[in-house]
Length: 339
Image 1 (spheres, rainbow, N blue to C red):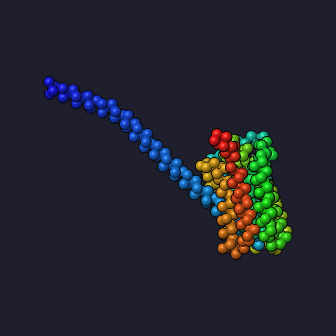
Image 2: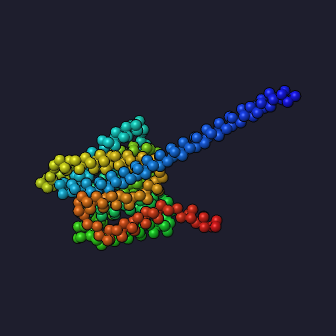
């Protein structure tokens, strides 16, 4: 009797194992898939931080290289040549967007990006660099995220909150404190021009925000850069004619202009766009002070620029300014109410 039950018992046991095997195998697959997803997220996050560091290092170096060529040619010519060179790498990166048509009603916004962002801002920044140090101009320009927030409120109808007003006050305070370390009227003028470039970039960025909701970011950048040449080329030629005797062209100057165009406006734009595809824009904006830090270090070691205590105080204020502008206070209030 016992011996007769053994086959039935064995069959029952193996049947149970067979029934549980698919479920166990499914759980193992889900765990493996979850583990792979975590690994992939970690890899994406790691590469995103790498792209972010590279972007702000390249942008910081642009100020130093711009300062190096400031004595060889006028600011308008440097800015024009930079954008002419930048069109080639940007056009290559935007080659997949050639079939996308631009709506007629969007053309004024593309023109605004080009004329305010890539003509006005780049020309003003190069002028500021020629009048003041690379580190100072870069520091003032680090307040760009706050400018975007303010002009988004003014032009797009976004709410102007007490936080927005406080951020604007901190940005102005940081810029004013930096001027205390200026060595003369020309340097103060450079700081003021850098502050104006922050405003023009803020308006252009609002137009970019509107356009990137419909078009790829690299396409917006490339078309905007092409629009900028409408002003860059004639203004650059006029500057070249007026200051022909002051222009000194050597291998170093040519290499610097190529670097500004290919690296500063080409590769850096690619890494920035790539970073924005991996991380939220608010997270990326928090690292803008890295631009000033990198340019300050490069300016100190390469250009022998002096860093005053006012520079570091301004750096702290502008860093707090950017941090506050990206802080979600509404979530904090909700959390307090819940507790």
